[in-house]
Length: 209
Image 1 (spheres, helix red, strand yellow):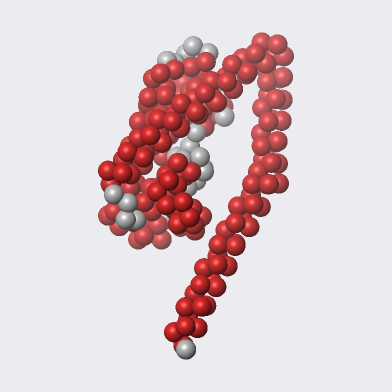
Image 2 (cartoon, helix red, strand yellow; image 1 turned 180 degrees about the vertical axis):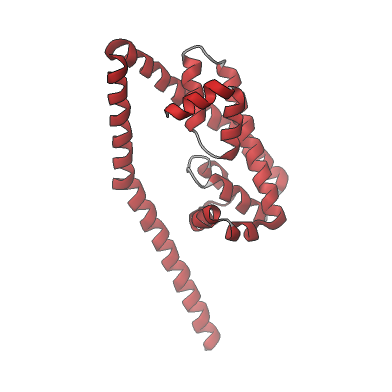
């Protein structure tokens, strides 16, 4: 997280726009924490983050409309996340726009997939507008709260106390993910693959008969 804070301190709001355009929350949360400390304007951080995410989604959607599957299959990062994103898109249709926003690593491939789908551009535009604004407000609130808590811990326990809290929180988050989230997601995807294989088997059996 320290690198994200240094990135924001050096490039300001442009860092927030660039990082939210690409993918993640790390720089956005760091900017929110700096806003909590009075170094950035809160409303500007929210607006820039929402704009970055929105422009990024529209950009990758346009790529999907152009040559989506060719690009997904050619880029290892997109190809790796394609099965998970495709399953969510199949299951939740257009409303998965809101789900992908909170699944790290799937936003770009999801936007490309939406470009490959039959969704109307203006519907996608409207859903993304609502999605990016609400996401920016929620993530800013999280980052702001973390910033306030960090300053309180730093004031009371010093830099060592703050470092211990951050390391403990990171370790707890990783443990929870690998203990529950990762296994649940893997089982969910494996069950979906099994359903697809059964469907293909039934279709082949029907054709042979």
